[in-house]
Length: 117
Length: 112
Image (cartoon, rainbow over all chains, first blue to last red; front, side, top):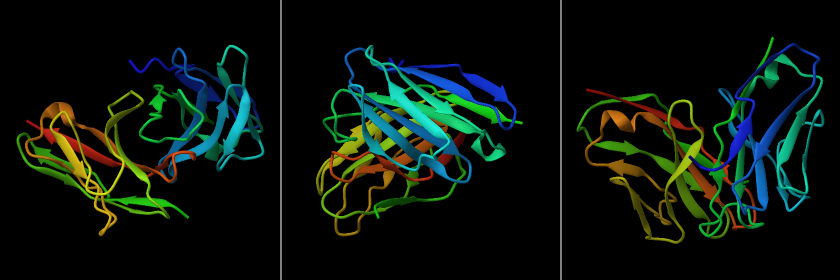
């Protein structure tokens, strides 16, 4: 168990809808990262928050947004969903602000599988 | 930009066979290198890491050596077990202050 909790495990919804994915980081970790894993694109970094502030942005669509709350949990909001948004969404956390050095290991949750029908 | 290329899968091996999963990278500077493993239904777990040239990371019988001259970080294991069946991801951290860059993953199936 990595200590990172993601809910829900599975989400099935229709095109055009909006969903929210939730992530609770490991106790004490201040950084949260969101990744999208799809068959064609592999594992892609979306966005990183550190202690409530956006730290880095990757290949995140404008229809997607995220935030990190004072208790350090994070939510990823996906709107106007399309079939191509179907994927496994991972959250990871680390102690420090840095992205993924050997001294700032990222710990991953089990993911939320989103199916857009 | 920075990138990681790893061998396409799936790879199917018999128990006790030798494993090599190739990984090469493109990066400026001196990245840290990682192998993550994803077991069925689970998130990614760090398997091993190396932070500088000629470093060897090792864990659970797996090894990988940071080769700067060939920009490679191949994963090896001398004798695989059925429990090693998983997807393996090679990744790099360009500078320690940017998010990880992952390869596309290699699925390994080990049969008894």
